[in-house]
Image (cartoon, rainbow, N blue to C red; front, side):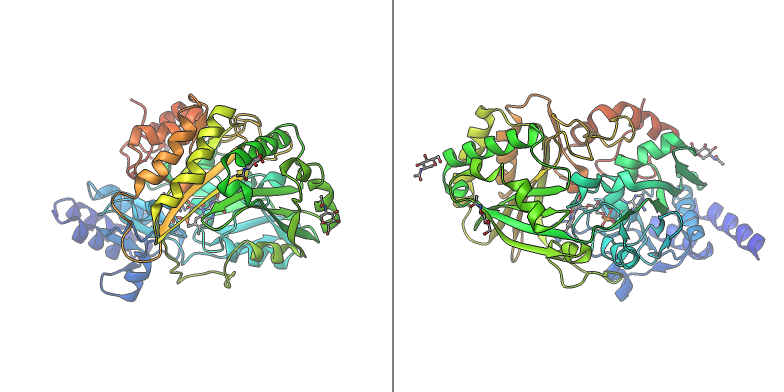
Length: 500
Ligand SMILES: Cc1cc2nc3c(=O)[nH]c(=O)nc-3n(C[C@H](O)[C@H](O)[C@H](O)COP(=O)(O)OP(=O)(O)OC[C@H]3O[C@@H](n4cnc5c(N)ncnc54)[C@H](O)[C@@H]3O)c2cc1C
Ligand SMILES: *[C@@H]1O[C@H](CO)[C@@H](O)[C@H](O)[C@H]1NC(C)=O
Ligand SMILES: *[C@@H]1O[C@H](CO)[C@@H](O)[C@H](O)[C@H]1NC(C)=O
Ligand SMILES: *[C@@H]1O[C@H](CO)[C@@H](O)[C@H](O)[C@H]1NC(C)=O
């Protein structure tokens, strides 16, 4: 049986090479290799081509819909044989740039979300997670056993895209990034072999996967360490209305906040971000511990932020309650089919403490520019309290993974700038709003900043994107790209270029 499939696959592969129409060629190959597919015109196709960011819709050449690791392997093999077809794995489909769909038309998309089993080994605390699972499903299964790993807030985000490029959330200051909890991965490489990647097996591949994973293969199975979840977590907000309209207040308050963070004022158990939008400016936090602990942690900071400033909305939760609080979703156990959607443009930054001159320019932009946008735009900025001396992220040695932001001082804040619309098309002249905002930061910071590919900005050129996403890791990543994927099968518009 196996032999017959192998023989017929080989015959078809040979034939496929001479077929000009790449869609037909890839479809034939997948069919003959016994790989399930989605076909145009079916509801599966509609679901599988769905883009979270409706601004960036792309049409694949074909969609493989694997239910086994062997299906994934054969799909990769088909693409490698049919010349000029690029392969993109798609997990949760939440890439801001629709890179799961290839970031352009004509890719073979390997839609993984039919493979989302999660299993916990209670003796070791190691979770085995199929690569098409979404965060909410993973958390649902693990938290039932009183465990979890560190990850982001959105239940619909795919575990693979998230972990391969970072993975920050309301447990990251305490426990690190999602990728810091990965201890192993099973990977299909460009040449159709299946390998293990871990600290002891293919360690350089494992290094590359944790930060730039979409460039090196398709992860089919993850192994994560887990931690026992705390009994009580406490959510809170601190409203800072003056910062929204008064640039002087914003500069003064933000300086205090960054001094507090830089000097180790923020205890490890605290997880916090600054949210600004058209209606509010507030700190939002999740303290791993009870409300009394949370108040004690904030007590030295609050008087520095202005008179009469205090925490509101203080609520104690169990672990799952804390996750739900910041999920902004009624559905936590998210599985296929999933069709969340927004129409937006986003940018990111990672910076150290902001010099006063930069801060003044940023604040001026912040209190004036958004007001000139007019109706229909829905913008926000999120600034995560990311680094500092007590952050678990920056305690990991910088060469442990390819993820580039591990310096407690240089990598103090992670930013997301997001500008969406409620209806219709994102305006062609809309981009300047966020471009200008990010420019107010970067013009004063020299080379001491980076960007986060989990908030991918598809308007960056390919070389610039590689530089700002991977910084010091880029030279080694390009060497490894040459080793593992010299023909750029796993290409997308911002993919790493193999070393010359
Ligand atoms: C609503 C929302 C909330 C978010 N919240 C957070 C947050 O709290 N914290 C945070 O850090 N980020 C957050 N993100 C960003 C998110 O982490 C990234 O967009 C992430 O890359 C999405 O992963 P995905 O699997 O859903 O996306 P996909 O679009 O499926 O994949 C993203 C990239 O990973 C590649 N990829 C996917 N699966 C594999 C695989 N198995 N093997 C190899 N490559 C693969 C794809 O080819 C693509 O390049 C959020 C995004 C959204 C839309
Ligand atoms: C703006 O904030 C500064 C610093 O807190 C304060 O001194 C000033 O009075 C505020 N200006 C207005 C118009 O409220
Ligand atoms: C904040 O509110 C709490 C609870 O109401 C109170 O105990 C505390 O004294 C307040 N702190 C400040 C700085 O106002
Ligand atoms: C596939 O690629 C890997 C990584 O470059 C290499 O180690 C392995 O030998 C290759 N296998 C085959 C069969 O070519």
